[in-house]
Amino acid sequence: MTEEPPHAIIQRTEQTMLDSTQPPGENGLQSFRIHGHRVYTQQFDQLYYKRLDDLKPVVLEQAKRRWTSSDNKTKWTPKVLNVEGPSLTYIIGTIFIDSSAKPSTLDEVEKTHWIADPTVEGKYRDGSEVVYLEDESGRIRLVGKELTKATIASGIVAAVLGAETPTGEFDVAEICFAGMPPPLSSDDNPVPSIAEDRYVAFVSGFNATIEQPVTLEMQLLAEYIVGNLGTADTQRACAQIVQVVVAGGLLSLPEPPLGHTEDPRANDRHAAAKLVAQIDEYLADIAASVPLTVMPGKGDPADVSIPQQPINRYMFGQCRQFSGFASTTNPAWLNVDGVEILGTAGQNVDDLRHYSVNGESACLLAAESLRWRHIAPTAPDTLWCYPFTDKDPFILEHSPHVYFVGNQPVADFAWAGDGDAAARSSARTRVLTVPVFKDSHQIVLLNLRSMECSTVSIGHTMAHEQ
Image (cartoon, rainbow, N blue to C red):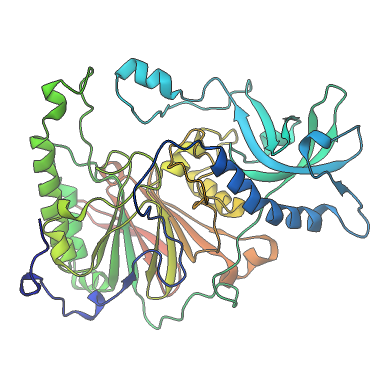
């Protein structure tokens, strides 16, 4: 199969269609693309070692600033197994939470005969879990009320202040994380100056089915985005949308039948192929009017493990005719009019919610992950990921202007920052969660000029909420 010849490519003329996005990995942004032949035989220990090696110096710097001053001479114990006696000290390592409620891949395979995504609906922390801090020397059990006060999860690199108990455990008094990463630029992460309102529209969770590929609300959404719906004022506002991002959840395909792959029902892909073609046709109506970026999510035809690689462009036979169409990774970096945007389809935050004991919202968990400098700390423990050996791509090297998370229960917005930096809008990151469209019939609009967010409810009665 080959690409269409140049004369068959539909060219854009509207100003808003011209180069509004940059592909991930350009302009100094991190890339989540896995190049070359993918090998899955490696062990995950190298990923954990690399994570600790990269983040330990950063966490140590934060811990020294917080606990070692002219008035406070608390010492750092370099290895967790070297802690001795009741003297106050701090240690650095990777948090690991051992719980019988965590999913088991072997159990899933035994029950289904398929290698399925080992997700569960309940909590991984119910009071019976055991929390450890690990480094290259070994692990030590953590105890104390601070463990239930702080927002923590497996895989986070942190410093803990406390003392050893008579039983050899470490009683935690305080926890310190890496903190927000530095900005890409040297000017405290300034948002580019944009003279007029320009919007990015985020939507996720169409969850199209074979029985109902395009719902009425989806049709109304397309009409709204291209400016064919609503009053003249609404249409003028829609003309200011310069980018549409579909943050995963395109399809909701039926589960494969139980049994072996020889089952002919498991190999029947005609209905699924027809559904993909119908979604492609639907999205092409949007891509014809405004740049469109599609990210894979849970259940979409892409890798199960993160970073999910782009959905194959040949599944978008109509969309790929438009120069503003992009099929990207999950997670992904985007650059829209100079605004650096990081986003995921939501699996990372979904997994973090299983560790929550204080009822933190998805938006708060997303903001906390920025302060951990890691957007998917629970991978590979309870979130499947590729077995990297030379890097941990989920470590944040710099702060984005915007961080979005798709396929969440509700739309929510917050600012993330460290200490005094949180008071300066130039040093903050705008965090937003995008709801499942099939349930909420809502999209999120981000104003690139003001960084303000709002929702639009799509239905018989259109509603716009700040």
